[in-house]
Image (cartoon, rainbow, N blue to C red; front, side):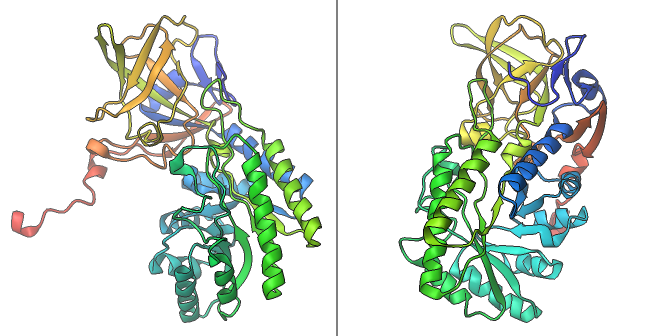
Length: 437
């Protein structure tokens, strides 16, 4: 089995991450538990940052915060020199609370509220990624009222459908995100922005989807966006100087997955940008990418305790764990598939095919439908791999379960970065009306 990052099996036959024995992590922090391999996260940040800078010096890596964001993660990003892609007032507030520089934030979202825009303006957020003409008009109004000028990118739909789950395709024509090309919305938006006194058009942005293995759609998107930059220059005389190509590079969830390398991805998109710039006699723009999953995905592992085991004769063996769709919504939402390892008996021979069930009161709460594992008993520890992206971010309180703790591990040290919720946390915002007392 592929074991990412610092993960290994120690002399006791226990799974170890960041030099920490997972059985000891469970004793200290309980389960379910999100374990983040800090060394691997930093390594991935540096791979993107250093390779991009080498092959395309006028560049910037912006981490996509929606994948996984906490105050500790924001500190790590600041230390590694990455910018930050945020998509809500809550993500902006989290980053500001951690001391992350506002001018290195890129603010996305298809329906930013006036309150969120005002927060971003007052905080000095570096750039707004404008998703619609109505948002452009609202931003101009609010920036004027604040006496500020807002730097913007326009989010463009390049009309490309990447081969991924349809819920996470975002670059095609029929998408809730961005401005179209064929319908003329993109050019209309540019023309309006150039006339607005409180708007500073800096660049264009696109994002074609997530968990993509084939690099051809990324190359095609880069070409389309460079052609649009040329069209804007020809029709308005304005030169777009920055191009943000988003993220979407896939990771390994299953042993059979073969994602492209970061190096190949960056080389292919930069080559496409350079080729089209030369064809149109354009200067090279500042180039940005926004990786999220490919930085934190394989760095995350979720630890569970095995509970009830139920045999359905002639059908399947259900093994229930103490988590489920409350800490991993991706299986129910995207039919995502995972590998897992028995953390407390990692060297034990595989003897049976089982289905891993969550404990939510919902038939759809299945984490893994078929997996070959050692014969399991109540109290065993199951580690589900590659859960660093969109697991903590999507965690919820369905059935009033509490959300798990998160720890960063590195060099044998485990640091709690998110406390486990308590029952008291569940009712913290509940109010019983006076008339019911």
